[in-house]
Length: 347
Image (cartoon, rainbow, N blue to C red; front, side):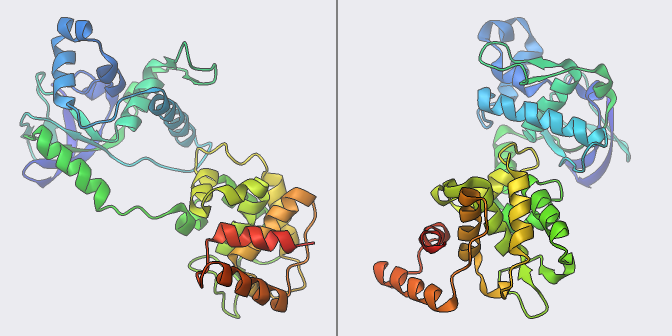
């Protein structure tokens, strides 16, 4: 009977830490549960019960989700090895059974099944680290994880709801995701020091000689006199330099999420981004007056030509702005469309 060191938050809700070694008899690999055949479940009562308790409120482990678990496993391994910074949220578990709490430990009986309500992909990733994973047909050689049983004893954070039902678990899953209100990468990338795009921008700032404190790191572009320019403006320029004309084909938020994810492989042109940032910061121009779409256009032009274009002067920019508004019945238009029109005029 495993016991999990916990703090009791409410009569049926606990927060603590555990290991796969402690709970693997009660908490099966969710990928295995999801992919089990009817014949396999018929032969294994625990597997059948786990599949029944999991119900239909979770996504299937198709190839795309399996690959996310592989990426997650590699991320966890890198963090715990000290090769990169980062961390993992607690895995949210639930069980239909009740459990005994002695004030510091939650006792899990042999017949208790724990199901991941939130954090299934992380749980699958941790099983991959312990057991190994080789995708086989349809997967490539690097879509694999080398197993190490030492991972069975690595602790991770959990929250546990006991005496729950499938319906209650579904509601908890909905509410935790709905009310969390995730903040976009665009607004938090300054904090993501491991992000590929952030690293490239920071490298360019260092090369330019401009002190980081002279760049507005949070909020909208409107930089006051105390700042040289803003991170959000440089971010738009970096997206332009990284993707070239392709930057105009998707929203800025989508590109930033793709480029600055901690597991991203989207940015192969970090050196181009860093060079662009270093050069644009040395422009003899009040950069506070160069807005996000103008900066993106400069980045795209740099990617195409390998050199920094001269920004539009205020007269030319105002004329273009008026033209775009007239064409759009007074509407400002999207950043990417405006940036594309600006880039057409750069020389």
